[in-house]
Length: 245
Image (cartoon, rainbow, N blue to C red; front, side, top):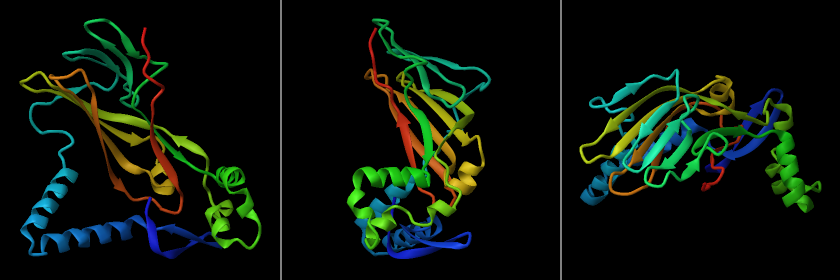
């Protein structure tokens, strides 16, 4: 979340409210101009660091060579050097994770790992939050605290909902050293999550299972966020706790 340098007035139906977050288009223009300025600064070190950052932001989500597309009509079973895994074909979460050497179970369908949840907040959510944490500030006349309770939100469509995402494609890749990769792409099941709530249009997962260590690495990228910034949200990965059997 980004705090703007000056309040923005957003017309919500026939009501007007102030928000403290810049629009995504404005943020993108600011960042784009900042990158141009750094590339043209004349400082070779700054230019090199900027180019590295830009390259990191434009990683190829699905490599064009060597990947093996996987069917999305069934769960994916994957065996790496250290683990047996099952990924859900609903949203690419890990629904089974066990060690090869000991058969110890670390995750199952009731205790998944890396489940993507995108939740929007309602006016009632903010009122509950303020009544618990800023109760003294809800008295009339305290503009800052009343603004924090999102005046005007009560007249907008802002549901308290967790928006589900659906798997659209995935593929695997094995390196020569035995490292295994899984690439998965998710889209919102309900287009309103993108057009009205502000979710990105696409979320890409890159799982890596290194050959040199019994570990899991996950990189998440989201693209094409075009929704409004006046509706706030939380993006989180639900982790129900590693457990042993």
